[in-house]
Image (tube, rainbow, N blue to C red; front, top):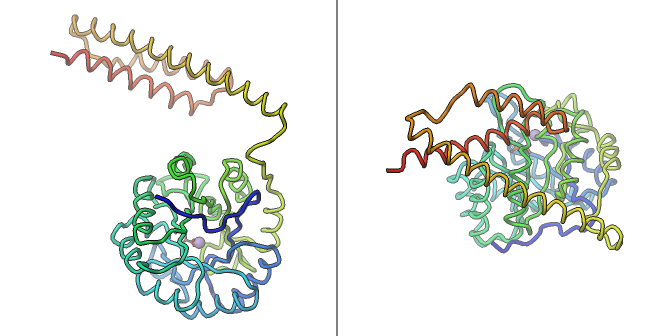
Amino acid sequence: MNTFPIFNKKNTPILIAGPCSAESEEQVLKTAHALAKQNIDLFRAGIWKPRTRPGSFEGVGKIGLKWLQKVKQETGLKVTTEVANTIHIHEALSHEIDVLWIGARTTVNPFSVQEIADALQGIDIPVMIKNPINPDLKLWVGAIERIYNAGIKKIAVIHRGFSHHGESNFRNIPRWQIPIELKRLFPQLEIICDNSHICGRRDTLQKVAQKAIDLNFDGLMTEIHPNPDEAWSDAAQQITPKIYKELINGLIVRSLASDNPKFIETLEHLRLEINEIDNELIHILGRRMKIADKIGQYKKENNIAILQTSRWNEILDKQIKKGNKIGLSKNFMSILLRAIHQESINHQAEIMNKK
Ligand code: PEP
Ligand code: MN
């Protein structure tokens, strides 16, 4: 894919902000005027809202598009809204919406994404694609490809986290490795962090925004409401324009590179050290697997089962404690040990099942 950036901003984050939903002309314009003063790059507002359960507010519908046109006239801001089907696209286009976005509940469904792609055939408008609600990178890539194949070249992606079951501090778990992998595969895609839908609450918005910037994301999408507690959707996560200003001013944006020779030399040196350690780690893991092979052979000759739970629990427990003492988190240790253990089992199984 050979996509082009939508925003093409250097050095400072792309800022997309606006209410979760357009509720009234007054609410939309009030928010937009406040945000225009803060030099945001794109004003967002949901007109059609995909709500989890029926009976909640499902958006004001196309009358809201007129309010967005007014935002453009009065503030000069560019505007974006979510589209999920052909009718939405025709309405959005006939009301001069500048950028379209595809929501997380739409990205999951290839039929819907293809319908959108077909409706966009031959039309030149930038599209932002949110991650699917489930942590499936291929599905996200598939949606990007469908839109790209329709001839849309200006594409960006929005990371809004992933659904889960059970307790979490996040409304949608970020699973940062998924957007990072997407960026590795398609470095030219601008990647925006929707901190509002990841957090689902106000007090963690800043921290998640900073994390995204530290991970070299290109920008942020944040929900803003003049009176968040009264919002008709996603009240718990929306903030006022004033709090938004503080959030943005509080961000530390680090540059990607430096031309200070001392800095370059030091970094180069540390990276070499890391490379050497990585080489050693791989070598040691290889040695460990060779021993697993021997054990496999020995168990085979004596007709003993591969998995011995008591031995495994003992290793896990002991090594997690050791790791902890030198600053390796329990979570990391347990993922690492489990991966090593699984590879050992695979090696042994191969040997034991060899005819
Ligand atoms: C939204 O941006 O308001 C929205 C509905 O988001 P998502 O598709 O990420 O749930
Ligand atoms: Mn929302």
